[in-house]
Length: 206
Image (cartoon, rainbow, N blue to C red; front, side, top):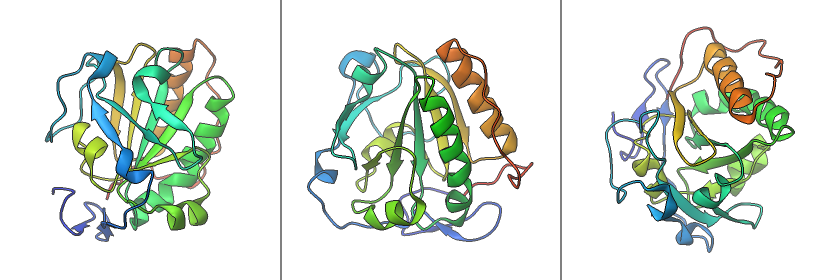
C-alpha cells in the first residue's frame, strides 16, 4: 500500500500509519533531494527500496537540532544510518527505543544517524519519543519517495562514499542485530551488544 494515502492499514497488526501532517515550518520547507556528488539519478517516486550497492539519493536540509545536513557531505567522512519514521504509527513507536539504543552505541564509534519523518511539524513526536538523533522533517515526502519507502519503520545504512549497504523494510530483533553488525563492519569496529529484550522475532511494519 502506498504511503501517500491519508493513512494505510498496518500490514501485520492492523493500525494506521504514515498519517500526514502538512503544517509548514521554516526548516521543513528547505528539504532538498538531488543527485549532487552521490552520482544517483534525478530523484523521483520509486516503488521499491534503493538496492544495496546503488548510490544513495542525496538529500539536504535543516535538522531538528538546528544543524544543516547533507548526505553527500556526511558520507565523505563516515557511514550514515537513516531511520525513516512513520508518525502516528504504533509499529514505529515500538521500534524506536531499540533504534535509539543502537544509535547511541554506534554514534560513539563514529556512525552518523539521522531520522526522516513524514511530517512538517515533528515537535510532538520528538518530545514523546526523545530520539537519540536529529530529525529531518519530510512532510512533502521528497526523501521518502526518493528512497522508495512505503512503510514504517524503514532503516537504510549508507556506507562511506555514499552507496547503500542495506535497507530494511520494517523491523525485528534480527533486523536490529544485522544493522548493528553491518554498521560495525562499515566502521571497522567490533559489534556492540544491545539490549533487545522484547523486540519481535518476526518482522513487523506499518
